[in-house]
Image (cartoon, rainbow, N blue to C red):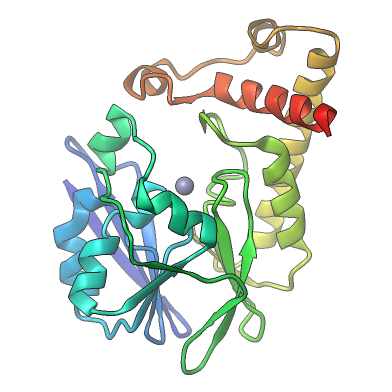
Length: 275
Ligand SMILES: [Zn+2]
């Protein structure tokens, strides 16, 4: 089943696509269109619907916020269809030449994405006729992730920086400390609308992002404290009474888990002690 929703906020048109092989989709992703620019391309499982809805637009350039399959799933298809240039951070361009493998569950709900060799690295800003978007690196959830910020309109396209004010599972190579730094950096910006890729916030986005920062800071402090006392990842998990969402861990073959969050903090600690 595929769900589609759209909304308009000022000059921004949002398209929400959800796909599930059974029942109502629980996972959705948003594509944003502004003045000829398409931000992200959605999951390949919904590619027909994406093309049907977005295909009507006058897309003159595409920007990919990061290499994950729900953002880059229809990149090649849409780029060929619109015959336009596509941009991303330099790291994203490199990753997309040979995208990392995705898990079974990611494949079921999002679908895979083919490599792209045509992405153009873009570091400072990207412009349309009417707007200029600053490109702000926000690593942590993904090493290559960037936000787009339009200071005159106070729009923030935050990719997967927010998603929710707390998080229960990570993919394997996320970093908590980098996400903390990225959120702090974004909170310094004067933005009013947060066009999150999964949960757009037309008002109050800043407050929610502050909430997520507190969540991550507490989580980081709790896990770090026990790690410094030489607890293992398993002991920390038990001591802090964490619970694993077993079906998510099982279907993702361990790619998604709460334990990944604990291990991420341990890695962050080990990395900072090496510097
Ligand atoms: Zn992502």
